[in-house]
Length: 447
Ligand SMILES: Nc1nc2c(ncn2[C@@H]2O[C@H](COP(=O)(O)OP(=O)(O)OP(=O)(O)O)[C@@H](O)[C@H]2O)c(=O)[nH]1
Ligand SMILES: [Mg+2]
Image (tube, rainbow, N blue to C red):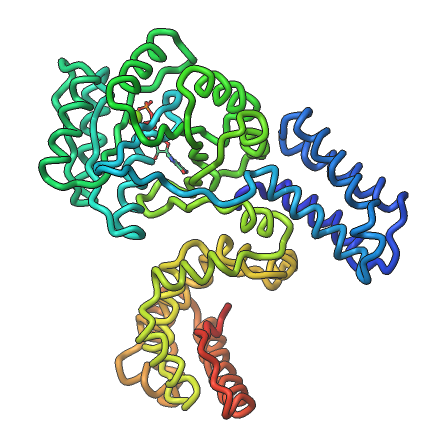
């Protein structure tokens, strides 16, 4: 998960103050000391940490906490609000030009993820905003860079404007915009070249592109894994180009990532998106409030619901739910439901979005293991059609066959059969209990 270490430490800290009926100055002092250490350890800029802790302290010993009926919870609310502010306060949007196309220019150091994010952003604009984007290959220094963007364009089935390595990036950008106008593309996303370090020549070129095409947005792409350097890079790019927003990439990585949290505080520029993986759909709109909630272990139900809406066929989900209630739920249905959930993303990432689930993850035995789940899939896939509909058919020889076919063991097959029966029983009980007030939501029994 993004900011895992920070999340662990902060959650431990706030856990201790949560239930307190009275919060003394000493409590606040202890808590803020730990918060300070957690942030520093996560590589958040020390000045940013200092300001952050000062604000939390002021508010936590102030009236809003002391006069609250639940001071412990109120302190946590303060921490959450300040963490949200640190990451940017209100959620940010993408500009829309008065006259299309809206032009977005991607800038950043080498390897930060500009080209990948160009593809992801185009995909996002089309899928979530119903837009028609065009990609522009303005990194003319390496033929491979152009090929990379063209490959992404093919995968997405979106046009890529390219003119090889001899053309000048300013001309390419201008011509691409003219072509987009003519063909009614409403977004133009320009992928530019990167360098290993901030370098005058590159900045000059980016400046030229900017002056010529007057982009509506300049997104600075920053690798969240680069630590404190990320902050300096962001500062220089912003000084020279006045970027309009930041895209943090590789937030799926294991590193501390805290430096990234300083970017907003240092540059004042909002984080607009977060890259959560290499795949083209692994870009999330960055919502500071939701991220703060995730970091503090309060879950992120909104994102979870959005993911479900994007990836789960709602009609089928309703049908499956009906089946579960009526106990006609088969292994085929189970398999389908598992597939729908898996489409939503890696399970441990999903768990971070469920309030309180991180505690569950902490218990060793409750750990949800991707490998275990693929075993379950393999077992079901090794059943015949009939067996999937009527698990009662299962006898010793069938079980042996299934275990062999799925590369598992008879005891694993037995366990799944037992779990499935128990699940069905439970679903039936629950639906009896809920009779009359049918829930609208979707049920994922194994989550
Ligand atoms: N895990 C992970 N990998 C990412 C993410 N974004 C980009 N990458 C990977 O980072 C590497 C570099 O990405 P590019 O998009 O080529 O970076 P770039 O900024 O265009 O690099 P240059 O063109 O060389 O300046 C690729 O292997 C990407 O797959 C992300 O959010 N998560
Ligand atoms: Mg590139």
